[in-house]
Length: 260
Ligand code: IPD
Ligand code: CA
Ligand code: CA
Image 1: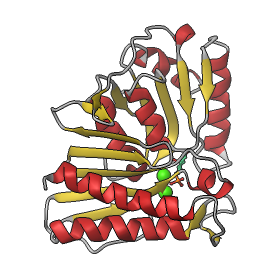
Image 2 (image 1 turned 120 degrees about the vertical axis):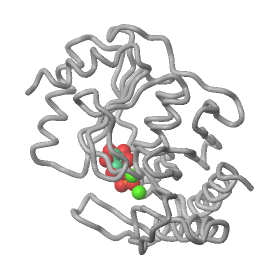
Image 3 (image 1 turned 180 degrees about the vertical axis):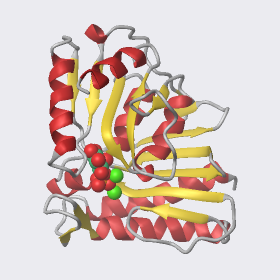
Image 4 (image 1 turned 90 degrees about the vertical axis):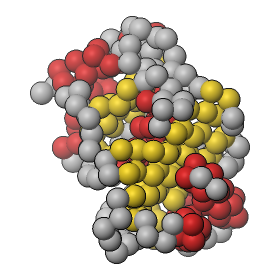
């Protein structure tokens, strides 16, 4: 099995865990705030994905949402969100996924995002294009904000970042964009840009496990992912993320930065 096949197999393991618990009764705990949730499905999905990958690559490193793993000198790192969209999952809303990326040094090699309920498997390998269920995908050709469907996300912050997010939404709405969605799963939001359903996405603060796989999938679909200044976001720390089909990127950055 190559890296991509291992990543897909790990995503399928996590997907099976999602399916097992979705819309059933399960324990829910809070993390940093009352609206930052974690379930047995998050934990079990991470265990399944990590153990499968470890069997193939015992020396590789892991950056995952639910656990800290000891780091070693190996230059390969798997970046995993075992369940992206936990709040949707808890509410029985079928918008969530598992997100798995493999990075060598600072370069993404593989990205896989799997939505088990809707049976959508997005994946990309560096330099080889991006795919949805085996079919090549591309970003859309929308080149003005007026025709752009945009997606945003709210980080678990109801202070300054939230005020900035709400003000940015206001500015975009008054540019008469086609529409704005808040779907609740950043990894899927990025894949929706990659396959042309949306023209752009932004969120004030995302963790590497939210955006690593989606970033490669968008880039391999012809789009771009930057921070709010138009620079490359680092893959190992929380960051502002702006993603688009490329054609509306500058315009999005202008609207986002107008509030400063
Ligand atoms: C969250 C989702 C959400 C985004 C948050 C993320 P989680 O991930 O991706 O859409 O707005 O910033 O933290 O907690 O469900 O894995
Ligand atoms: Ca997440
Ligand atoms: Ca998560």
